[in-house]
Image 1 (cartoon, rainbow, N blue to C red):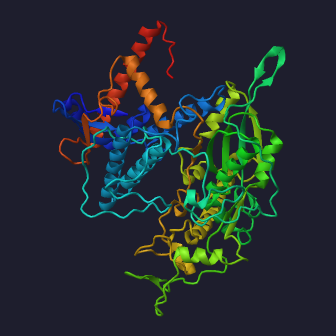
Image 2 (cartoon, rainbow, N blue to C red; image 1 turned 90 degrees about the horizontal axis):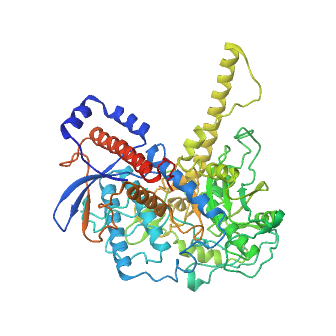
Image 3 (tube, helix red, strand yellow; image 1 turned 90 degrees about the vertical axis):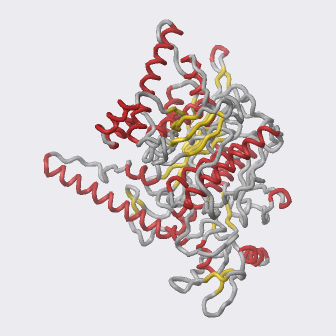
Amino acid sequence: MITRESGNGAVSGLLGSVLSQNDMVALALERGVCIRPMAFRWTDRKDGTSRIVNVSCGSRWESVCAPCARRIRSARQEQCLEGWHLEAEPEGIMGQIGPDRTPDAEETAWMGEFREELILLRDAAMAEGDTAGAADWTQALAAHEAEMAYLGVPVGGGTAETASDDDDGGATVAAGQEVGGDWTQAPLPLEDAPWPTETDDGGAGAGESDGGGGADSPEESGRRVRSTARRQDAPELPKRAMTTGTVGRVFPGRAGRGYRPSMFVTLTMPGYGRVRDGVPVDPERYDYVRAARDLIHFSKLVDRFVQNLRRVTGRKVQYFAAVEPQRRLAPHLHMAVRGAIPRAELRAVAAATYHQVWWPPTDRGAIFDGEHTPVWQEGIGYVVPGTGEVLPTWEAALDELDGDPDAAPQHVVRLGEQLDIQGVLGGSADADQRARYLTKYLTKSVSDVMGGQEPDDDGGHDDGADGEVRQSGRRGGLRRARQAHARRLLEVLRWEPCSPRCANWLRYGVTPLEAGAGLVPGRCSGRAHQSAHLGYGGRRVLVSRAWSSRTLGGLLRDRRAWVAEALGVGDELSREADPGRYTWVRLKPGDPGVAPLAERLLWLIAEREQGREALERARLEQSGDGEQAAP
């Protein structure tokens, strides 16, 4: 949402002084208005006019900005339903997106320039210690780079320092960078940014095997490729010739009517020990190490499952999936799959899917620990304190692994035996309910999800005040047990390597990939080590390329365009209005012309209410009975 600051300044200032900022935030939440608007100075290069506009933050977390997160969740539901039961291939997708697509020069230029601006803003926020702002810009940058890759626009080649593509997410900050800078296009708020989409063929990272069938050639992928021979303990899978279609099969019905069902599949992980109400019965015997490693590599396992499913079915299976934590803190995947697949084939694919992690061994324990950890020497690398022995590089450690005929993978991750498969018909109430269920927790972090699932630990019922006290005491005990379970898992995750660049490799006598000064074991900033993600560093939403003809950003833009058309107004602030004509400069609180947050929220609430009233009048005028529905 892009909104200009307008209205009676004296009145808004008076109301802003009467109502506290907390009051305005509460009112904004009630009216569905962004509570963290970003102020920009918009300038028209053609006539020289300038004004301050507010851009919604577009956060996907309800704990940060509930109105923005709910809009994104609503758009995700629409995206899920839009591509689930298609009867024809989505327009503008097949053969027009990916490496074979050739973008024009203008598209490549402005997307590259916009990417550089996002990098500068992210680095400037990091330099100022604004961690929240840096996280926002990093998220926007990742979404923009995903859109570039999605559209076939090459990523890179800019003059600004590029973001690291590892889990640590830590490109260093260039000195002397400043906040601001001109944009030749409108800024891309996070609600407009297309969420990173899952590629058709997931690839393993450096030093990892294909694990579960097939591998790109080393020349094409630029990574190590080990033998693709299947493990002896994994069943074989049939392989059909690949077809280009993505829509499901039509089954004949009664009275000559056909129907085209689709699937709703839930994948889970194996057990790590007995649990009750999400808490290990015996924490000492619970396999926290295996649980932590499965969490770290779960996204790769999902890639393998999709690859194997496509090989078995012989078509580019399309899916919309969401990753959620179970009460025991293990991940599971809800997947809407277009078209019907025999249940026996789905179960066979799940049983045969695995992912091998070919990293240096860690099971023999840490070599360095406590204060006795390798230290950085400029021009040399990390050395053993006292002896000065240089630690082997990541590539040298993998070379040693490749040269050992008896080497075993550092970890093998598999799916659990529990697999839920449901058939769903398009347009049914069940399809709508499944879409809502699939997107239910997309706007919540792992800690938020766990906080909302606190069932009683028994099936009994107590009456009276004494019973309520006992019931409350049991709930409190269960909550404390789950918190202790999460702390134990986080402690294990703290020391587990999450990627080739993780600082924890120093504990095992290996220099991390692309290492620099300042790495400390146990202090890796990767998402897998953060309590909000609890081991899972991948995307929460996985959408295949040919799921629908619109990305998340496209859905949000179409919604805004529909409103603008219904109101009979143009979007003069849009970046598509006149490319190159407008510039945007991010402003900070306290900059000249930027009103206090309470006043800006008041303007936004007033404009939202005026817009709703105008939209309702337009609906009545256009339909005559007010029954016109928004897309």
